[in-house]
Image (cartoon, rainbow, N blue to C red):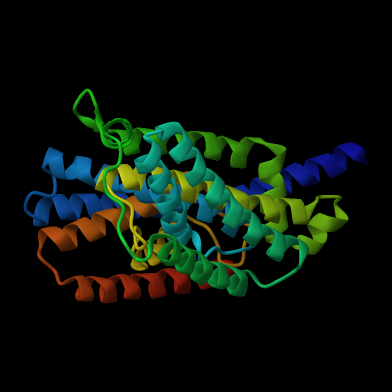
Length: 323
């Protein structure tokens, strides 16, 4: 009976992870890349491709954090404003003291604080994720504006900019290298660890997971801490790339890109499915789409409309897939 129960448990895990087929996001991305290479001038230029991967490296951390949250059945609307809030604090200290390590540490601490706030309210107070993270989104944005008096922060240390926005061998963008390392680690955690199994089962059916002696509160709580951590890393990388920190470091439409990429990659808005690899391919597709709009000179407002339609289609496909 014990062996049978263990086999049933493993089969359940394989089913949950197996549902996150990578065929769709990989196929969409490859087909789009081929079409864009043929039809869009300069798309396949090496400098343009490197820019795409640099953008992937910047938004990829937020997308990974969103993947963890959505697998466990939640959603985080606050991550992009948490980036701004943590960035302005760390950048201010960095400019004042010249201490890069202390400044980066503060960015991580502030972002984890907001993630902890989200996680505690949702996991232990049983509050609705949408409402909690929406409130935190406003809170973080208001804090950033109050802290800086709506002023941008310039004069970041040169070594900070060189480390996090440079190019390895004067060719490969550092953000792309960092996101590759983080993605590999997070993919391993989700696919090969007991904690990863907890997240899938919690998102699939929280009541059943609790009966199976899984600490679902802890599982959900930690996903928001991970999301906060990823926002902090984004704050570090993005501040170095743009060489400044502002109260609107990440535009609000980027949240739509992150959610769309995560769902395209196989995550469900109802929880229980998703993968880091799928999310990365989904984000690559969204990033290429935005890059093509820029190359073709498409109005930013029209680009937002098109991306909005893409998000609606993606959510509709998610509903059909869930059924």
